[in-house]
Image (cartoon, rainbow, N blue to C red; front, side, top):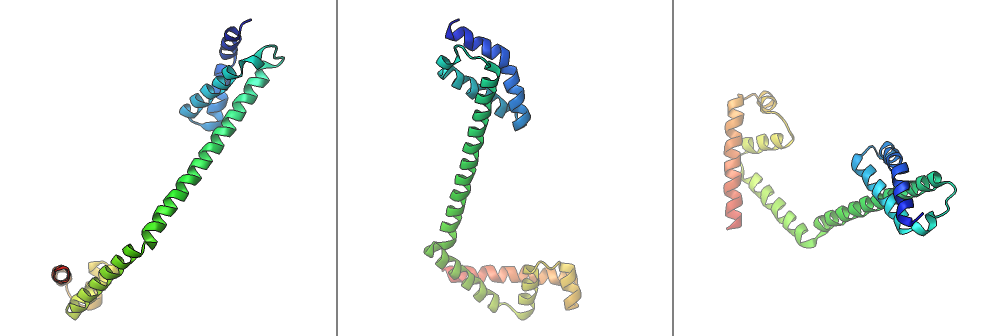
Length: 168
């Protein structure tokens, strides 16, 4: 038999078996198809070793198994490389001296604008920043919810004005 005939025979005899095996292990049609294709590509590229096989089923399954293992190793490596990339980007952003100076400057500007607010507005803004609900703030400060909302609105307006003045 010629190489092509042997290859076609292997595919017709074991293609579905390899696909099902790969699908059962990967739980993905896409992965199963990829493993099937890679397996038979490897078999075709090494078709000289197919002649005279005594146990073709075992050989084809071994190639499929090794293909899956290689694929899993590549995917793990890609995930690790991506995680390392994300970590390096995050580190660059966090530890960039220029960005750090900008953050310090912004933080200082916001703190300065907060200090310029009337006491009641500053207290309400700080409680809101601590994730307090307006209802709770009103109850704790013994004021109405609408007063809390008005103070928040005025505080935000004053903060914006102070921050714009600092930029100018």
